Length: 109
Image (cartoon, rainbow, N blue to C red):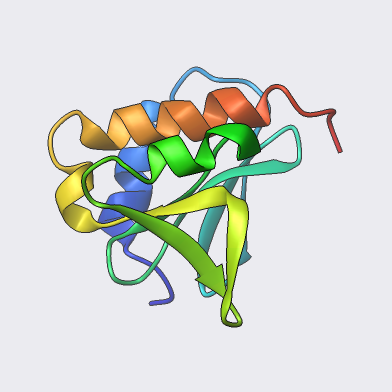
């Protein structure tokens, strides 16, 4: 298993009824795309990475359970990592919605 299947199912539930949804294996996880733009991805540890407005990255990093998204030793602005504790209850929906809404501001691919 390359990603947390239960988490992926929970993300699918949040996105039920949305148009332009696709899924793609990426970064060792499962990404959810809106019109071809990645919005959120589930990983094998039960965490997610979320696309956020670049100009709000620093503010969002002040939220509980959120860390910078780091790939190849570099922090990626416009993306954050949310751990399991931040996804409990309605937390997952909040983060998925943030990523989904931001991806909707981008031109379709």
